[in-house]
Length: 83
Image 1 (tube, rainbow, N blue to C red):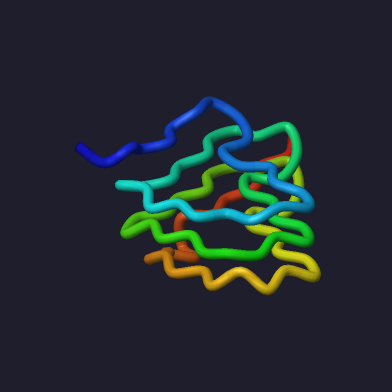
Image 2 (cartoon, rainbow, N blue to C red):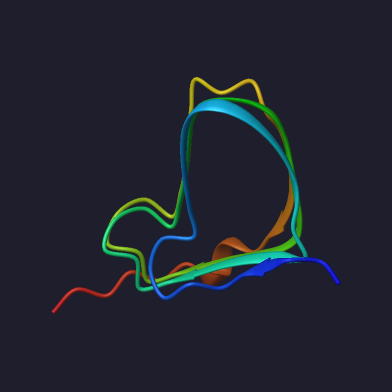
């Protein structure tokens, strides 16, 4: 059975490394920061479903990474509500 990440908060925060991961899905809800953050990451990541809902910061941030990223993503699912 594939691993599915569904935390309440940030789903992934990876910096300086090599990633070799296939997930069944990635979901982040109400993150106090970024839903998914990849910085200086090599390797590869696959996720057939990716959802980021209501992050306080950026939904998905990929900076200076050479990783091959393959994910199905619906940008309509990102909502940011501030009171």
